Structure formats: C-alpha cells, structure tokens
Image (cartoon, rainbow, N blue to C red; front, side, top):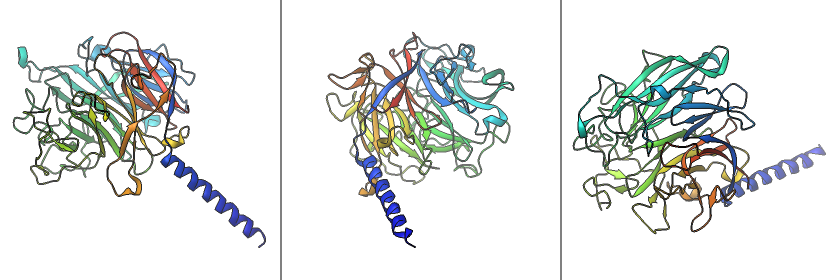
Length: 455
C-alpha cells in the first residue's frame, strides 16, 4: 500500500511528459536538414522500402530503371528492374511520361509480386490519328515478379499487363500507385492531358474529370488477387453500374503523387496539380467528386477563361452530389506573381510524417512543390498541419524551413532547393526523403536522394 502514492506520482509524471511532448509537437515551428543519401539518377520519381527485412530501398528512375539502394547509400550495379526498352520514346526536354509508379504487393515476401505504371508506345488498338490529331501513348499497369532466389532482382519476363489506358497527350498522367490498408491497388490517373480538360481525347462539354464513362481524372481501385486480369472490389462506388467500375473517386486534374497515412485513420492523400491559379491536396474518400473541371481548389473554374476564377459555379455534380473541398490549397506563382502566398508552380505531394527522428512533424503532411520557376530549379519544401480543435476543416500550409550545404539550397531571395523536386519517399521506419534533379528534362545524371533529418 505504501507504494501506491509513488506509483501514482510516476504515472502522473509520465502523463504530464507525454502531454507536454505532444503540445510541443503540435505547436513547435518545424525545421529539417537535408542529408544526401545517393546520386547519379536522371529523375528519381519513387522511393519505397524493399520488403525483405534488409533495410534496403528501391529507387525508381523515370527513364525506366529501378535501383536498389543499400543502407550504406550504395546503389547496386545491377538494377532491380530495367524496362527502358518497353517505354514510349521520351523527350530529352520536359516530359511527364516514363516509369511513373511502383508498389510491392502486401504479401510480397510470399508471392514475390510487384506492380508498376509506365508509359508504353501506343498500342495497335488505340485511336491513332495523324498530325495534330495523333494520339501519344498507352499507359500500362503491369504485374511483375522477382526471381525465386533473389528478392532484389525482378524477372523481366514475368510481366502481366492488367490495365491499359490510351492517351492522346503526353502530360497529365498521374501514374502513382499504392496498396491501401484494404489490400486493393489504388491508381492515380490524370485527366488525359492538354489544358482545361478539353481537346482530343476529352469528353466535350464536361471534360474527363466529370465523365464517369472513362477512367481519366480519377483515382481507381482494383483487386489484383482475383479476376482475370483483375477484379472489382464489391464496394467500389460504381461496381453495380452508373460509371466505370474501377472508379473509386473522380473530379481530379492530375494527382501526381498519392500516399496512405501509415498512422491515424490511414487516409489516402492526393496532391492534385492545378491549372494556373491553385494547387491542392485532397483526402480521398470512396465515391468522392473533387470538382475538376468545375472547380480548382476552393474556387470556381472556367475553361474559357482559366486565369480568372468565376464568382459562382455549381456546388453539386450532375448526379446532385456535393463537390468535396480540398484540405488545403495554395496559390500558384504563375497565376499570382509577387504574391507571398504563391508557393510554387506544381505540387509534388508527400506523406503524413509518422517517423521518430522529427517529432515536431508528427501527424503533419510533409510535401514539396516541384519548383517556383519552370526553367530555374527552385524546389520548395512545405508542411500541412491539421486544424486540430479549431473547428475548421482546412489545414494550415506553410514553408518548411530547412538547412543543408550551399550546393543544395538557395537562401536569397527565397529559401529553395537548387533542384526540381520530382517526388518524396518514405522508408520502413516512416522517415522521409526528397527526390530531385537539376534539370527540367530527362537528361543528365543530376538526380539525387536526400533524407530529412534533424537540423
């Protein structure tokens, strides 16, 4: 009985320390440092852990090669996968095509399966066209296996194509893929390219984002463990009709990168690249319509006058369903030059931080913008903070201060990276990485991987 007061005091002290730590995490101004891990890539676009208990990472280079990155930062001489000969001919200048996404099956250790999204040459059955009407490429979602004896070596002959999407334009592909906590494969697909969600390959009058008869401008969800070549989850919103059964959510312009929160409610975050005025992040829910091309961010959008937001527009879609607002938006430098609230020109996306090295970022969405300038590399690191108990549904978004060597950062007139941020990555411990290059085209070997560490 005499020990009870002491035990009670210990519990109270521990609770007090826990509460204090969480208050600090919620209120502290976060900052990070950049630690170079690897270099020599063209355009690193994806980084995920190799699920074999080795601590190694897979780095996807947009030009068609997947590398194995060791714990010591060494890049394997023999790639994990090389499909450069299966890609459409890529531009040496700016290009949104290539090897765009990689995801390991949740049972990768047992079944050796993984999945990729890449831009293949236009298939024979696709619309062809000539001159300005010529279609561009076919986007493939494919399954591969690694060899039986080496989890770090793909079997190039094991490809099984699951889904193909014929594209009229080279841009607005999305192409990020990820398995959700439900075991289904989620796929981000852009609106098809061009601008204003119109032109060849777009549905006249409403655009692809609002057209439920095609897969562009959507988040798709499929079951890769059933069917031939896949099955539709029975609770997909249009599994029983009313739209393409693969559709999970729609009304999106170009969700370049998507990610599931490994903690919290395991929500799906999608960074949607805007047209000219606003960049946005959405939490994706089943059957959600996120408004494109009726809306851009929180604002109305007019394809006939895309640089000015109309004062009024519909608040519901053709089925009477309310459009879902993003959790936050920020102004695009191209549409709001010299505006301090304009943070970048193309949202890259990121992850909700669930690691241990940076406790002040816990539960915050850490992400990037590709650059503040199309020609000069000026990547930006950003952070979104949940609204907490304020009653607001909007997250706060602000620049994430960072430090690093002078060859990595520019401090004047703005704190930016001397690089274009192509993507973010997350390892098995929930620590985050910045994937960048110094060219806005697919040339050279300036691509680097940096880890976010404590400053």
